[in-house]
Length: 524
Image (cartoon, rainbow, N blue to C red; front, side):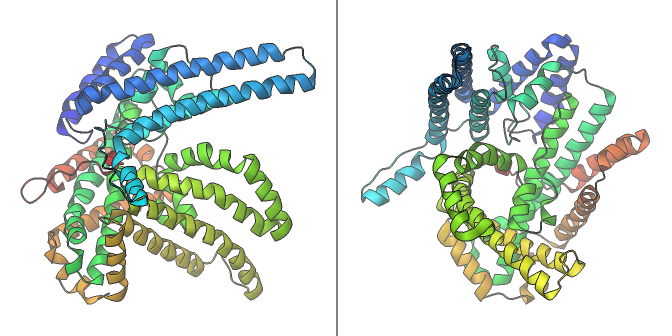
């Protein structure tokens, strides 16, 4: 078993886990979830399960420490005058911040040791003019996800959003809950643990809805993403022999591959959660309907963006130096331009972190800076656009204007993913140069595209399934829930599950000429 896309997971591990969960007494079902979660983690990562255990113990103990400091703070502040109470609270706040920093540094050091030693060693070696050859430690599954979730738990305890849990098993389950451990989404302790401890008994409706969602995710992954991967690999590994038209197609195909792979994984995760009575946060909201770069990141990998917003953007923007900068900018530049410039400091921190989170490579840092520049520029452009629209009477709600916004944003997305997928930043710039300078639209339609591993039948299959995905996304964008609409009709629900099974079995990209593709975001 290599992931939740593997046959062993779908036909053995998941059904056995669900049965074990169902027959366990309600109050102890969370224990069953903990056992199967650690079993899943061990199957995927072996002895590296020790990393998540160490992380769990660290945040459990530090959370109790924070809780005790908060209790002592409140006791000592009780009955004091306002000025004295303020002094006591400030002193304990400093202590508590140090505890949070200690926990963050410890968990991030584990993450850096597993994923970034080689990268930072190379950067330092270049700066110092020496050779700092460092090797990454073996990385356990999901370390990028549970490390940030561990930090969010500590920060939430510090802020008083949640109380430190005195049961280490609850903390362990939060970090290791098996649907989340490979690719997320990022969850918050206060939202997730109450559901995991509730121990809802599996029902027919939830099982059908979960199954339907899982099968939809499998269709996106096996039929579209894994098939497009053949074309994408062929072009990105031999881009020097391709003209600009083929590179442009590869950039679009990679974006669609990434979306179908990652959103398909989230469909499986949310479907599994439904089976166990747990509602997990959605990670995508029709991202290709975005009208700006900023809007795109409110719809794509939503829980990662929310994590950066709550635990980096807000703390930085509310810090003393940035608040003073904001006041200065407002006085000198006005209430419109000033806040954009001051918030750029916090945005810069967010996008550096976003780039590095995705991987240890210059192309990932560039990817973060790419969106940082575009979002800040977009804020300024929005101010100018409003003024110009008012002056020339342009209707910004009209279909032509909205279409322009949509097409512009799609171009931004495709170019960004070109650099993201490129095998190094130099390769990204070379591919971009070829795409712009040697663009040949004829190669898209004259059959040249058939020379990269896919035949016309593959393109037709991908097109038909993507059309179905588009229809479903349009319905969701208009406020409908296709899954819920279907599950209320038993015959239609059964027919949809059978149809999805047949689609995956008949048209999935496996067998002769195809190779299994690991979940893409599991490596980030």
